Image (spheres, rainbow, N blue to C red):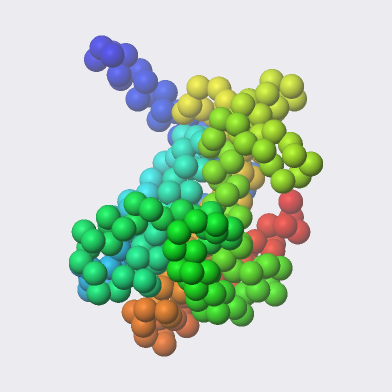
Length: 272
């Protein structure tokens, strides 16, 4: 790109961000609040003393923290694919960190990182390979740590986390088969829907883009952010509880934020 082309492109992005900020503020002001809450939830733990052996703390500080701060820009540029990928990466990174800290507590960081290469999210809900006993016990640990959420979620806590992750995975893969009637979805399915019904459930035009007139994409943003925020806090609470890394007061604070996230999800279901 030449200098003028770069300038024009930057001006276009600026105009999109201003327009999208106004549209989000008028159509779904709660979206900004939830973004701020998610970032604030992550921020609370960045100032804590860093344990260099902890893969969970590493993920929280060096993966989740910067990705959380990228979310507002992703929304302002109306780029749902990027948000889905970001949210999926956040959830899986924390789960990998929890798995390694839980099973290999005293291992050096590099040893944990090497072992993590074999981690599979799907094994938490359906394991038929090696180390299944580890996945089963970690699943039990998560469900026990946040078992008080089961009735609120209508399912086991670890199943909720995996369902959020799996839904995000299906949307960023080219072709996937959804549970509902074996429907074909993924990026191809979403693009087809966009052409068939004209109003896409996510943008398939060039991105960045203008969100104006597309409430479906705002709803997708809102659901992704609220569900990801809940999953993050559930994993932080579980890690703090199982590993003894958080004080009772800190656990109470995370529990309060979990309840707030659940309340927001309920309200979201009523309104939409």
